Image (cartoon, rainbow, N blue to C red; front, side, top):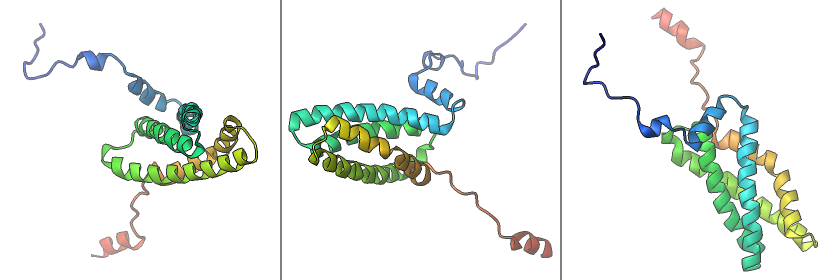
Length: 168
């Protein structure tokens, strides 16, 4: 004979039993190396960025507005996906957001400068964007891994601390 305690909540809820896209992404995190996941998120963001840059450029006629507008949307998407995939702690949101904004601001400025040079030399925007942004991929990865999503260094005790503790 089994009895259940009325004090214990029932664990089955509709939202917990149905996996969401974000939960599936977090599950993938345990199985796929970091650089592959970063590349996947980056390619997704780059696809959004590329399409928006071409659309905004055709609407405004300005490479600057196109690059900046597309970057704002794609970077927001990338930031939120990366936080979820790499299980960033909620209390680090604003620190991560500031670091991410600084890194992406630098990447966007470099991207715009490169695209401007290439389009000024006669290259079409679609080609200039592919060439410049693909060369910036590794810079973006290194900057994010070292400045935004870094794992804090463990607090080390000095070599003298154990000796002083035993001497007391």
